[in-house]
Length: 507
Picture 1 (tube, one colour):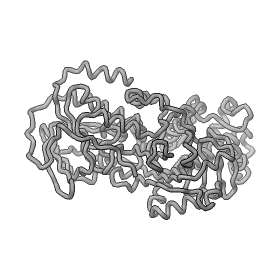
Picture 2 (tube, helix red, strand yellow; picture 1 turned 180 degrees about the horizontal axis):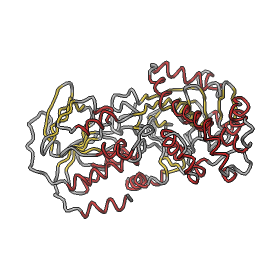
Picture 3 (cartoon, one colour; picture 1 turned 120 degrees about the vertical axis):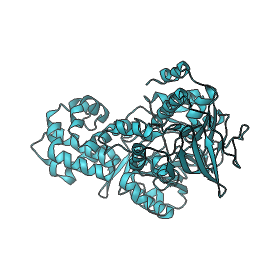
Picture 4 (spheres, one colour; picture 1 turned 180 degrees about the vertical axis):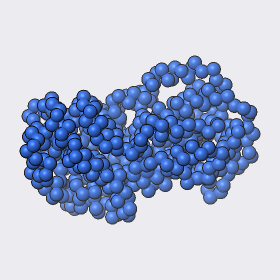
């Protein structure tokens, strides 16, 4: 639904003003919901279990100066058609910070490591044909089909987790080559005939995706977004959106309040939380829970129906791991690389270069490794020092400069699958028979307990999904008519009407 239309609907609902809503989680979903609820005349408080706000928006700054270089350990890009996200970027006065995010395959000078052979990514499909042979040298198919298939495999190898790489290999050998041979591929090659426009191909040939295995089909939909030339970023860091939203909220935002139990009652929700080592319990009229189901399933839950519990316990999360290097200089620019991503090989997968300029006096930053799925899980099992060494050793095969003394100034990493407050990078629908049913089930309320987050949306893994689900939850809260007003249980830490703002913590 269009953001403007959805926000206008809020004004049309004949709702009771002055509701009190407790929001669990200070990520983008919780903050957007709080912002809108307050604007509509309601009272909110936000409880965050971790020491920081922002959820899976996490900008790590290498230094304390305002122009220090930074890496996005969480969300790092905004598709240009994600109008709900862009609405809040504009609402928070950040539109002037929007700039292009150069993604994978957009930089022709980016590199790829294929079985120890380092080459520019634009040459990778030809080399793949020569080294792998097999279906790529099968003369039953035209040279055009074989080259196009080699490009597809190059893209899948760069982006997809291991199980989907295997799915593609199987599908390609069994029937996808025949489908490619049937299609007119000429419009999707560049003028020099060496690169392809995957986005246009997948958009204009739905029959190809229809012939893929289910998980691969859904993943190709994600790839269409990831390889789009219309991705955006916020110059200065994505956490600016979090900081502006938090500053716009009057209600209290308290960190280090770990939720340990949720008990759904007829017209209220009882929350038990831990703060400073002590347990507190209180009753809340309305609760909006944005806690990821990967974390929620570990809590004590009562008053939930069986279908809801099934959704909470069976929503699948994909691990994600990022490793960033603060470097003395942007040495990759000497090779003509001005952004985009290389494929460093092994379990490191994608290496991204900044497409924004940092102050040269402070050096630069490369996102040395961005992995999802099984690759991320393996890296998540390493200690942080082991992870740093592994990534440096692997990426230095395409960038030997990394091994020179003093080139790496500092490092940062996050293994989202192991992070206590997310226990996963994002939800995935690659293996779901009916993903729409899954997100609707995740979204469904339990009396006065409502739910939001990327796991409750049509857009898993994207800010758009978190924001859309937050707005839909706000609408449902507005419409809800309470059976009776609940009575708060006296607790040590009661509702704070004159809170102090909690600022974003930076590691």
